[in-house]
Image 1 (cartoon, rainbow, N blue to C red):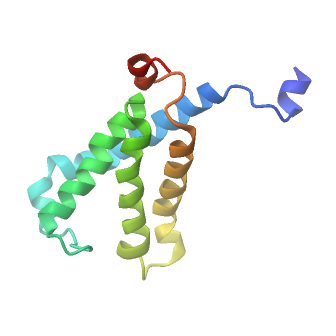
Image 2 (cartoon, rainbow, N blue to C red):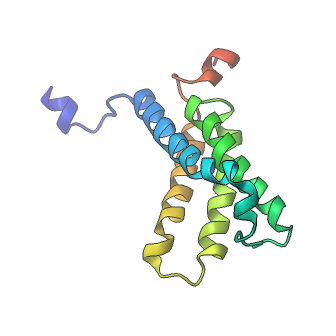
Length: 135
């Protein structure tokens, strides 16, 4: 027991990956659901940071946060669906919060870094991908 706690070997990477995906994905669903359910109201105040129009920008954010968040949480096409989340967080960090103090933009940075960890780990053993693709 002492070796497990103080040792350098991972306890269970698959369980850690599952917990990370579930928490990360659910947090994005939480952030994306108000944007989805109040889409028209939010378009009045949502910025067009990349020059593709407010509705298109908001639709992409809703897709990344809500729908990709669900896919990441359940482990469905995890590496593919974490990419839109990464792009959204990069835009949030580098453009939306460019002039804000660091304490305001730290959350998008943390999400961006966590999305790269999830991309590196993949969906893991406890995922829909594992059942669909028999990895």
